[in-house]
Length: 112
Image (tube, rainbow, N blue to C red; front, side, top):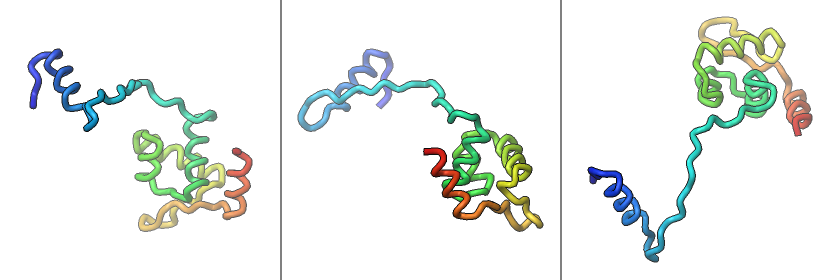
């Protein structure tokens, strides 16, 4: 159903929003502000995500970081320079996490 006026829209929302008990639903305030990023910036957030998940594929990293693919690729390249990741040896292989499980655990424990 399409409302023609704002008042009609409010009425429709009110009527359809009632639950079976007939009470009006709880209204929720939606914020359009960007969530605050993790202290340390996007590189630190990427390091935390990779340390926690072990994921290095750009599609997954981009989805988590909510950034452009090229930006994530640049950050990932910085992690190669910082010896967190190893660049692929061929086009068919992906980036490899260099840190051992113990080093990852130590890093994550130091965050807490």
